[in-house]
Image (cartoon, each protein chain N blue to C red):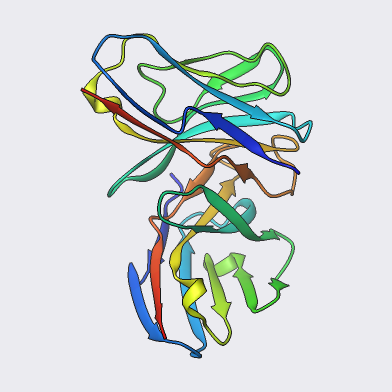
Length: 114
Length: 113
């Protein structure tokens, strides 16, 4: 089954404790991205990757890092999480950056930073 | 800067009604427009994707139209069912904005039996 898998689904942690949210897709997609969803602000892109070893900032990249060492994986790293990063996070993938193919989303990771 | 607006923010209808959800965008230079469904605590499920050269797409009871020149899209749901209750999101890939999906804030639909 074609899917985007995120882990963990839920995480409560404390300020400053480094964490990584993993994302994996099994569709051989080139393009992957991370979004955060906040009440009243909607979904906003954090980072994206056009292909292996090619990443770039989205609209709200501050406080986040990403890497793309393999095509299927695109982890999101919070080096020193702060309470304003409490949010619902989604990983997404698409066949290619401007392909007219639908974007597929994972089930989301709800992060609470205390 | 591309902005996507969805009206209404919330909608309640009785089962069986046909309904229309609206989406508007400020910059008509788009690659495509996608409609998603989001259930509480769940991810986004892609419903329909309309390429910039297309006027509409259909899937089952869903029909999405695109009028790129006026910056509008509608999602038509026929014979609504309680299982259709969810938040519906519209998003565009804008030429100017690059590769990101630019989302509206969604319409929360409640269908009562």
